[in-house]
Image (cartoon, rainbow, N blue to C red; front, side, top):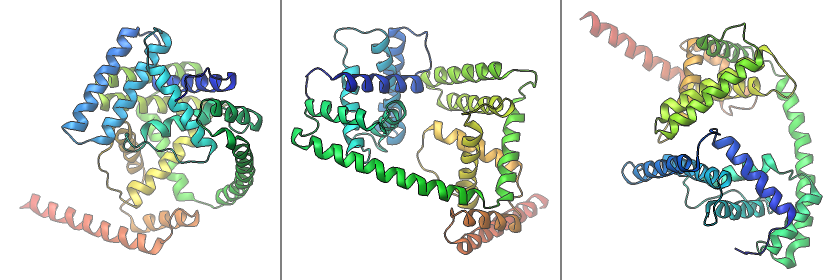
Length: 359
Protein backbone atom coordinates (compact mmCIF):
# COMPACT_ATOMS: atom_id res chain seq x y z
CA UNK A 1 0.00 0.00 0.00
CA UNK A 2 1.35 3.42 -0.97
CA UNK A 3 2.35 5.89 1.74
CA UNK A 4 1.80 8.90 -0.52
CA UNK A 5 -0.44 11.69 0.83
CA UNK A 6 -4.12 11.17 0.12
CA UNK A 7 -5.90 13.42 -2.38
CA UNK A 8 -8.55 15.72 -0.86
CA UNK A 9 -11.59 13.88 -2.26
CA UNK A 10 -10.22 10.48 -1.29
CA UNK A 11 -9.29 11.66 2.21
CA UNK A 12 -12.76 13.15 2.70
CA UNK A 13 -14.44 9.96 1.45
CA UNK A 14 -12.41 7.85 3.89
CA UNK A 15 -13.24 10.21 6.76
CA UNK A 16 -16.96 10.15 5.98
CA UNK A 17 -16.89 6.35 5.80
CA UNK A 18 -15.17 6.06 9.19
CA UNK A 19 -17.66 8.51 10.71
CA UNK A 20 -20.51 6.36 9.40
CA UNK A 21 -18.93 3.15 10.73
CA UNK A 22 -18.52 4.60 14.21
CA UNK A 23 -21.98 6.14 14.27
CA UNK A 24 -23.51 2.77 13.40
CA UNK A 25 -21.33 0.53 15.56
CA UNK A 26 -20.23 2.47 18.66
CA UNK A 27 -23.15 4.20 20.31
CA UNK A 28 -21.37 5.17 23.55
CA UNK A 29 -20.08 8.74 23.36
CA UNK A 30 -18.85 9.20 26.92
CA UNK A 31 -16.30 6.37 27.17
CA UNK A 32 -12.59 7.09 27.55
CA UNK A 33 -9.89 5.72 25.27
CA UNK A 34 -8.98 3.18 27.96
CA UNK A 35 -12.58 2.01 28.35
CA UNK A 36 -13.04 1.68 24.58
CA UNK A 37 -9.86 -0.36 24.24
CA UNK A 38 -10.85 -2.59 27.17
CA UNK A 39 -14.14 -3.39 25.42
CA UNK A 40 -12.23 -4.12 22.21
CA UNK A 41 -9.81 -6.46 24.01
CA UNK A 42 -12.67 -8.29 25.72
CA UNK A 43 -14.45 -8.84 22.41
CA UNK A 44 -11.25 -10.15 20.82
CA UNK A 45 -10.78 -12.61 23.69
CA UNK A 46 -14.35 -13.80 23.31
CA UNK A 47 -13.80 -14.18 19.55
CA UNK A 48 -10.75 -16.35 20.18
CA UNK A 49 -12.81 -18.58 22.46
CA UNK A 50 -15.67 -18.86 19.96
CA UNK A 51 -13.31 -19.70 17.12
CA UNK A 52 -10.95 -22.00 19.03
CA UNK A 53 -13.21 -23.79 21.50
CA UNK A 54 -16.68 -23.67 19.99
CA UNK A 55 -15.95 -23.53 16.24
CA UNK A 56 -18.35 -20.61 15.97
CA UNK A 57 -16.51 -18.85 13.16
CA UNK A 58 -19.35 -16.54 12.19
CA UNK A 59 -19.84 -15.34 15.77
CA UNK A 60 -16.08 -14.91 16.17
CA UNK A 61 -15.85 -12.80 13.02
CA UNK A 62 -18.64 -10.53 14.22
CA UNK A 63 -16.91 -10.14 17.60
CA UNK A 64 -13.59 -9.27 15.92
CA UNK A 65 -15.43 -6.70 13.80
CA UNK A 66 -17.03 -5.15 16.90
CA UNK A 67 -13.64 -5.09 18.63
CA UNK A 68 -12.12 -3.25 15.68
CA UNK A 69 -14.89 -0.67 15.75
CA UNK A 70 -14.29 0.11 19.44
CA UNK A 71 -10.55 0.30 18.81
CA UNK A 72 -11.20 2.58 15.83
CA UNK A 73 -13.38 4.80 18.03
CA UNK A 74 -10.63 4.98 20.66
CA UNK A 75 -8.03 6.07 18.12
CA UNK A 76 -10.18 8.60 16.27
CA UNK A 77 -11.48 10.24 19.46
CA UNK A 78 -8.17 10.12 21.36
CA UNK A 79 -5.43 9.90 18.70
CA UNK A 80 -1.81 8.98 19.47
CA UNK A 81 1.27 8.92 17.25
CA UNK A 82 1.64 5.13 17.32
CA UNK A 83 -2.00 4.31 16.45
CA UNK A 84 -2.43 1.75 13.67
CA UNK A 85 -6.16 0.97 13.44
CA UNK A 86 -7.17 4.16 11.61
CA UNK A 87 -4.50 3.62 8.96
CA UNK A 88 -5.45 -0.07 8.69
CA UNK A 89 -9.10 0.78 8.01
CA UNK A 90 -8.14 3.61 5.71
CA UNK A 91 -6.37 1.02 3.57
CA UNK A 92 -9.32 -1.38 3.69
CA UNK A 93 -11.71 1.43 2.71
CA UNK A 94 -9.51 2.36 -0.25
CA UNK A 95 -9.46 -1.27 -1.37
CA UNK A 96 -13.22 -1.47 -1.03
CA UNK A 97 -13.62 1.68 -3.11
CA UNK A 98 -11.63 0.04 -5.88
CA UNK A 99 -13.90 -3.02 -5.64
CA UNK A 100 -17.01 -0.83 -5.84
CA UNK A 101 -15.65 1.14 -8.78
CA UNK A 102 -14.66 -2.03 -10.63
CA UNK A 103 -17.96 -3.75 -9.82
CA UNK A 104 -16.39 -6.50 -7.71
CA UNK A 105 -18.24 -8.41 -4.99
CA UNK A 106 -17.24 -7.68 -1.38
CA UNK A 107 -15.15 -10.59 -0.13
CA UNK A 108 -12.97 -11.28 2.89
CA UNK A 109 -10.96 -14.49 3.01
CA UNK A 110 -10.29 -14.06 6.72
CA UNK A 111 -13.77 -13.23 7.94
CA UNK A 112 -16.21 -16.08 7.34
CA UNK A 113 -19.24 -14.41 5.80
CA UNK A 114 -17.27 -11.34 4.69
CA UNK A 115 -18.04 -9.30 7.80
CA UNK A 116 -15.47 -6.55 7.31
CA UNK A 117 -15.57 -5.81 3.59
CA UNK A 118 -19.30 -6.21 3.12
CA UNK A 119 -19.99 -3.74 5.93
CA UNK A 120 -17.39 -1.31 4.64
CA UNK A 121 -18.95 -1.52 1.18
CA UNK A 122 -22.26 -0.56 2.78
CA UNK A 123 -20.62 2.28 4.74
CA UNK A 124 -19.05 3.72 1.59
CA UNK A 125 -22.35 3.55 -0.31
CA UNK A 126 -24.18 5.25 2.59
CA UNK A 127 -21.64 8.02 3.20
CA UNK A 128 -20.10 8.76 -0.22
CA UNK A 129 -22.11 9.83 -3.27
CA UNK A 130 -20.91 7.10 -5.61
CA UNK A 131 -23.48 8.27 -8.18
CA UNK A 132 -21.53 11.52 -8.63
CA UNK A 133 -19.48 10.80 -11.77
CA UNK A 134 -17.16 13.79 -11.30
CA UNK A 135 -16.42 12.74 -7.71
CA UNK A 136 -15.79 9.11 -8.69
CA UNK A 137 -13.47 10.27 -11.48
CA UNK A 138 -11.38 12.14 -8.90
CA UNK A 139 -11.43 9.10 -6.60
CA UNK A 140 -10.18 6.91 -9.47
CA UNK A 141 -7.33 9.33 -10.16
CA UNK A 142 -6.36 9.54 -6.49
CA UNK A 143 -6.62 5.77 -5.97
CA UNK A 144 -4.25 5.41 -8.92
CA UNK A 145 -1.84 7.73 -7.10
CA UNK A 146 -1.99 5.23 -4.21
CA UNK A 147 -1.05 2.47 -6.70
CA UNK A 148 -4.42 0.76 -6.22
CA UNK A 149 -5.45 1.25 -9.85
CA UNK A 150 -3.05 1.04 -12.77
CA UNK A 151 -2.39 4.58 -14.00
CA UNK A 152 -2.66 3.36 -17.59
CA UNK A 153 -6.20 2.11 -16.82
CA UNK A 154 -7.59 5.30 -15.24
CA UNK A 155 -9.54 6.40 -18.32
CA UNK A 156 -10.80 2.85 -18.88
CA UNK A 157 -12.27 2.63 -15.36
CA UNK A 158 -13.78 6.10 -15.67
CA UNK A 159 -15.61 5.02 -18.82
CA UNK A 160 -16.57 1.64 -17.34
CA UNK A 161 -18.00 3.22 -14.19
CA UNK A 162 -19.98 5.79 -16.15
CA UNK A 163 -21.43 3.02 -18.32
CA UNK A 164 -22.23 0.98 -15.20
CA UNK A 165 -24.14 3.92 -13.71
CA UNK A 166 -26.17 4.31 -16.90
CA UNK A 167 -27.11 0.62 -16.80
CA UNK A 168 -27.92 0.93 -13.11
CA UNK A 169 -30.33 3.81 -13.73
CA UNK A 170 -32.01 1.85 -16.50
CA UNK A 171 -32.27 -1.15 -14.20
CA UNK A 172 -33.72 0.97 -11.39
CA UNK A 173 -36.41 2.25 -13.74
CA UNK A 174 -37.30 -1.35 -14.57
CA UNK A 175 -37.22 -2.28 -10.87
CA UNK A 176 -39.51 0.62 -9.99
CA UNK A 177 -41.97 -0.56 -12.63
CA UNK A 178 -41.84 -4.07 -11.15
CA UNK A 179 -42.32 -2.64 -7.65
CA UNK A 180 -45.39 -0.74 -8.77
CA UNK A 181 -46.76 -3.89 -10.36
CA UNK A 182 -45.92 -5.85 -7.21
CA UNK A 183 -47.62 -3.28 -4.97
CA UNK A 184 -50.79 -3.54 -7.05
CA UNK A 185 -51.16 -7.24 -6.14
CA UNK A 186 -53.60 -7.65 -3.30
CA UNK A 187 -52.19 -9.57 -0.32
CA UNK A 188 -54.83 -9.35 2.42
CA UNK A 189 -53.46 -12.23 4.52
CA UNK A 190 -49.87 -10.95 4.45
CA UNK A 191 -51.06 -7.43 5.21
CA UNK A 192 -53.23 -8.69 8.06
CA UNK A 193 -50.38 -10.61 9.70
CA UNK A 194 -47.77 -7.85 9.36
CA UNK A 195 -50.13 -5.18 10.67
CA UNK A 196 -51.30 -7.27 13.63
CA UNK A 197 -47.74 -8.39 14.42
CA UNK A 198 -46.54 -4.78 14.53
CA UNK A 199 -49.42 -3.91 16.84
CA UNK A 200 -48.49 -6.88 19.02
CA UNK A 201 -44.87 -5.74 19.24
CA UNK A 202 -45.96 -2.24 20.21
CA UNK A 203 -48.45 -3.44 22.82
CA UNK A 204 -45.79 -5.58 24.48
CA UNK A 205 -43.74 -2.44 25.17
CA UNK A 206 -46.69 -0.55 26.73
CA UNK A 207 -45.40 2.80 25.47
CA UNK A 208 -47.62 5.54 26.95
CA UNK A 209 -49.76 7.33 24.38
CA UNK A 210 -48.95 10.65 26.05
CA UNK A 211 -45.30 10.56 24.95
CA UNK A 212 -44.17 12.78 22.10
CA UNK A 213 -42.16 11.58 19.11
CA UNK A 214 -38.99 13.12 20.55
CA UNK A 215 -39.53 11.42 23.92
CA UNK A 216 -40.08 8.03 22.31
CA UNK A 217 -37.02 8.43 20.09
CA UNK A 218 -34.95 9.35 23.15
CA UNK A 219 -36.13 6.17 24.86
CA UNK A 220 -35.17 4.22 21.75
CA UNK A 221 -31.69 5.75 21.89
CA UNK A 222 -31.33 4.87 25.58
CA UNK A 223 -32.32 1.26 24.90
CA UNK A 224 -29.84 1.06 22.04
CA UNK A 225 -27.06 2.44 24.26
CA UNK A 226 -27.94 -0.05 26.99
CA UNK A 227 -27.82 -2.81 24.39
CA UNK A 228 -24.33 -1.76 23.28
CA UNK A 229 -23.11 -1.74 26.88
CA UNK A 230 -24.59 -5.18 27.59
CA UNK A 231 -22.93 -6.58 24.48
CA UNK A 232 -19.63 -5.05 25.56
CA UNK A 233 -20.00 -7.03 28.81
CA UNK A 234 -20.49 -10.23 26.76
CA UNK A 235 -24.24 -10.25 27.49
CA UNK A 236 -24.99 -10.72 23.81
CA UNK A 237 -28.55 -12.02 24.16
CA UNK A 238 -29.55 -9.17 26.48
CA UNK A 239 -27.82 -6.66 24.23
CA UNK A 240 -29.60 -7.97 21.12
CA UNK A 241 -32.96 -7.90 22.91
CA UNK A 242 -32.44 -4.29 23.95
CA UNK A 243 -31.45 -3.33 20.40
CA UNK A 244 -34.59 -4.97 19.05
CA UNK A 245 -36.73 -3.15 21.62
CA UNK A 246 -35.08 0.09 20.51
CA UNK A 247 -36.26 -0.59 16.95
CA UNK A 248 -39.81 -1.17 18.26
CA UNK A 249 -39.71 2.19 20.05
CA UNK A 250 -38.57 3.84 16.82
CA UNK A 251 -41.45 2.06 15.09
CA UNK A 252 -43.85 3.54 17.67
CA UNK A 253 -42.47 7.05 17.18
CA UNK A 254 -42.76 6.92 13.40
CA UNK A 255 -46.14 5.18 13.38
CA UNK A 256 -47.71 7.70 15.79
CA UNK A 257 -46.00 10.80 14.42
CA UNK A 258 -45.10 10.08 10.78
CA UNK A 259 -42.71 12.35 8.92
CA UNK A 260 -41.39 12.41 5.39
CA UNK A 261 -38.37 10.15 5.10
CA UNK A 262 -39.43 7.75 7.88
CA UNK A 263 -38.63 4.14 7.02
CA UNK A 264 -39.05 2.05 10.17
CA UNK A 265 -42.64 1.00 9.43
CA UNK A 266 -41.55 -0.13 5.96
CA UNK A 267 -38.45 -1.86 7.36
CA UNK A 268 -40.41 -3.69 10.05
CA UNK A 269 -43.06 -4.77 7.56
CA UNK A 270 -40.37 -6.10 5.24
CA UNK A 271 -38.67 -7.97 8.11
CA UNK A 272 -41.98 -9.51 9.14
CA UNK A 273 -42.75 -10.60 5.58
CA UNK A 274 -39.31 -12.21 5.27
CA UNK A 275 -39.79 -13.92 8.64
CA UNK A 276 -43.15 -15.33 7.51
CA UNK A 277 -41.45 -16.77 4.45
CA UNK A 278 -38.39 -18.17 6.24
CA UNK A 279 -39.87 -19.35 9.55
CA UNK A 280 -43.54 -20.09 8.83
CA UNK A 281 -43.71 -21.17 5.22
CA UNK A 282 -40.24 -22.65 4.57
CA UNK A 283 -39.58 -23.65 8.21
CA UNK A 284 -35.91 -22.78 7.75
CA UNK A 285 -33.38 -24.47 10.01
CA UNK A 286 -30.64 -22.31 11.55
CA UNK A 287 -27.07 -23.21 12.32
CA UNK A 288 -24.47 -21.06 14.00
CA UNK A 289 -25.61 -17.44 14.11
CA UNK A 290 -24.90 -14.40 16.23
CA UNK A 291 -27.34 -13.34 18.95
CA UNK A 292 -27.89 -10.10 17.04
CA UNK A 293 -29.50 -12.24 14.31
CA UNK A 294 -31.19 -14.93 16.41
CA UNK A 295 -32.96 -12.67 18.92
CA UNK A 296 -34.77 -10.38 16.41
CA UNK A 297 -35.80 -13.43 14.37
CA UNK A 298 -37.32 -15.09 17.43
CA UNK A 299 -39.07 -11.88 18.54
CA UNK A 300 -40.59 -11.39 15.09
CA UNK A 301 -41.61 -15.05 14.85
CA UNK A 302 -43.27 -14.89 18.27
CA UNK A 303 -45.31 -11.83 17.25
CA UNK A 304 -46.37 -13.50 14.00
CA UNK A 305 -47.40 -16.75 15.69
CA UNK A 306 -49.46 -14.89 18.29
CA UNK A 307 -51.67 -13.19 15.69
CA UNK A 308 -51.99 -15.86 12.97
CA UNK A 309 -53.92 -19.08 12.28
CA UNK A 310 -50.78 -20.95 11.31
CA UNK A 311 -52.28 -24.41 11.93
CA UNK A 312 -55.15 -23.76 9.53
CA UNK A 313 -54.22 -25.38 6.22
CA UNK A 314 -56.57 -23.14 4.23
CA UNK A 315 -55.06 -20.03 5.79
CA UNK A 316 -51.54 -21.26 5.04
CA UNK A 317 -52.47 -22.06 1.43
CA UNK A 318 -53.78 -18.52 0.99
CA UNK A 319 -50.51 -17.16 2.36
CA UNK A 320 -48.54 -19.28 -0.10
CA UNK A 321 -50.71 -18.06 -2.98
CA UNK A 322 -50.16 -14.43 -2.05
CA UNK A 323 -46.36 -14.81 -1.84
CA UNK A 324 -46.40 -16.73 -5.12
CA UNK A 325 -48.41 -13.95 -6.79
CA UNK A 326 -45.68 -11.50 -5.75
CA UNK A 327 -42.97 -13.77 -7.15
CA UNK A 328 -41.50 -14.82 -3.78
CA UNK A 329 -42.44 -18.50 -4.22
CA UNK A 330 -41.67 -20.30 -7.47
CA UNK A 331 -43.41 -23.65 -6.89
CA UNK A 332 -46.45 -23.04 -4.66
CA UNK A 333 -47.88 -26.55 -5.12
CA UNK A 334 -44.76 -28.20 -3.72
CA UNK A 335 -44.65 -25.76 -0.79
CA UNK A 336 -48.30 -26.40 0.01
CA UNK A 337 -47.64 -30.13 0.08
CA UNK A 338 -44.70 -29.65 2.45
CA UNK A 339 -46.81 -27.49 4.76
CA UNK A 340 -49.62 -30.05 4.71
CA UNK A 341 -47.22 -32.85 5.70
CA UNK A 342 -45.68 -30.67 8.40
CA UNK A 343 -49.07 -29.82 9.90
CA UNK A 344 -50.14 -33.46 9.84
CA UNK A 345 -46.99 -34.46 11.75
CA UNK A 346 -47.58 -31.68 14.29
CA UNK A 347 -51.19 -32.80 14.70
CA UNK A 348 -50.15 -36.42 15.26
CA UNK A 349 -47.54 -35.38 17.81
CA UNK A 350 -50.14 -33.33 19.69
CA UNK A 351 -52.56 -36.30 19.70
CA UNK A 352 -49.85 -38.64 21.01
CA UNK A 353 -48.98 -36.14 23.70
CA UNK A 354 -52.63 -35.90 24.81
CA UNK A 355 -52.91 -39.71 24.98
CA UNK A 356 -49.74 -39.98 27.08
CA UNK A 357 -51.01 -37.35 29.49
CA UNK A 358 -54.33 -39.18 29.92
CA UNK A 359 -52.53 -42.46 30.58
